[in-house]
Length: 127
Image (cartoon, rainbow, N blue to C red; front, side, top):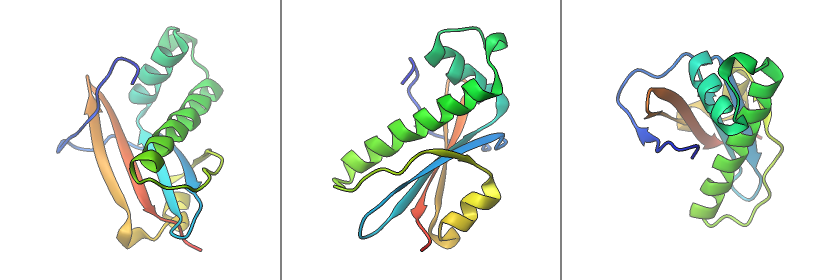
């Protein structure tokens, strides 16, 4: 993705400056979210939008993060062979994310690629 290959890392997770999430409906609904720090969001958004990081506005970063979580959820849906609709991606806070999922069952996996850090959250959606 964007010329980077993300791998699970044991390094410290980034600050969660921006978080985008979406739900996958179905018999066992899931929530998928991605978080990153300011530097990670800016580096990835600039690569996707083919612009300099200095040109980015917050709305552009948020749009990118929503698209990135949409693409990620689509891949997860495909791998899990789910035939369920994706919800609409939205920006959220970590507090609201924890209200949307069942916290004890949430996986929050730190990922890293070329200095860019993300956290991938996957968990069952609260009713």
